[in-house]
Length: 240
Ligand code: J9T
Image 1 (tube, rainbow, N blue to C red):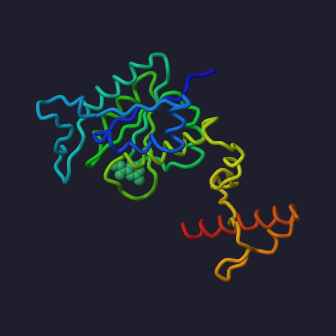
Image 2: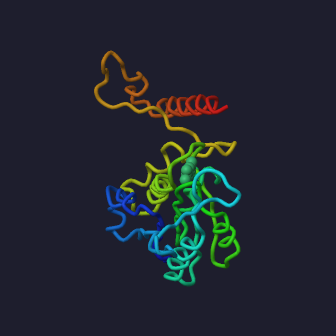
């Protein structure tokens, strides 16, 4: 049995991570299925003002996070787990686009360190340094083509998608396989889920499709597959 997956989050806003104590992720921690620790980057500040950012070399707008507080924070959490591979996740709009298959892959990682940058980003030498450090794998990830104020919200989204895949976290594991974003299409995309209905059979003049009331499971399955594929087509056309 491998150890339970451990997440070390480094941020200047530890309070931002409070939602991880709620709902399924909170329960997963209580059940001992995952371990989550949040660390304040500012504790690793190297000057009297406890600043963690400075002006960019070469000029330009905004501030850049200095490498040394990151180096100290990352080294400290890595030292707590000797002999394990450390997957360092750096959240940035310049990263690889996160998706379900990356979530799947990450759900087998043992030790993830999430570096939540603020301002205009983290000095790139942090990435370079850990790419060259044995025992580390570095992943720059984006959750989509838009800019956030920091990596915290991206970390919450990515962690939720990973943790729900860990065995024992969800009540009904079958729902993981069946749902949206889990069935990969031939082109490497994802098959979206079919539309769902529940009682009443007619709501504000809108009926539930006949086929779903028919009791004919083969026909229902066929209808759902068609709906899923039509939805997927429609979304893919939107992206073009
Ligand atoms: C500062 O971080 C971001 O703005 C960010 C991180 C991850 N994905 C994004 N799309 C943005």
